Image (cartoon, rainbow, N blue to C red; front, side, top):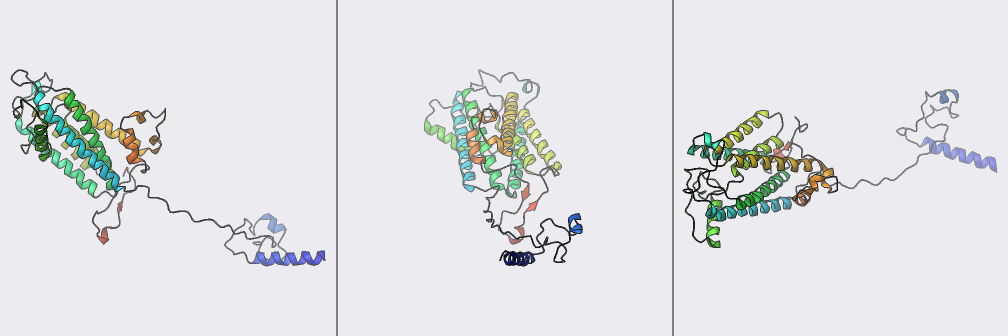
Length: 352
């Protein structure tokens, strides 16, 4: 009986070994020294290892579909847009209130300024600056429109601009400087500033998008810090960040346009030099700090070693960026549902 049982088991193992597909590799090779010295008993090439190989089948569950790495989250973009609108209105209301607190031009002249004191004011220079603002802003709109991850880029810009407008509404209100220009037209002051008068002024400013080229910006006092400089610098930073580095000509043109626009503000005596310097510093530091946090997901955690997490706006940042892991790739497509535009134009990397 033991011999018959062993023989039947040996035959069964041989049959199962013969059923193993050739695609399975158990690490046995016919050229191995062991197989050369001990050939298999059945005369095969050694792939079944003398009938001792057994196929084991393990059921591995299929992986669950992963979430997109760069989700659109359109509702967050809409929330960021609402925040931008609220803070823009807040800045205009702050200017409407500051207008009546501006020191009388006939009594208090412009403050001493190392740049303004040495150049003659050019009234047309402010119009040139605002034309360049419109060019830079429209270039950013065109770039974002064709960016594949346009909703992520849009809500970042909306959030950054809302933070800048919020801080500007505070700085211009707490410290009111004398008018920097002796020729810029300012509307008459009101003896009794009522809430209705403030709302009328704010609506008048909003209708002109805060620009004086259309004759809507006739209220004075919005000096610290320069809104023109904020817009020009932010436009350049957006173009440099979200377009390929091989488009260096466009980057240089954007940089020259921003620098020229800021210079024109000073030539027109539209702002003090300190207004421009503060605006540049605040805009660049906020932009670079935000994108440093956004491009390094480990910094999303607020702990004792992450000092950037102590920024007062960090909790807002974490809400908007918690689902975006890493730098946004430079990919572009057409926003319109045209069949031949479904395939996105992909660039090899962010440094190309």
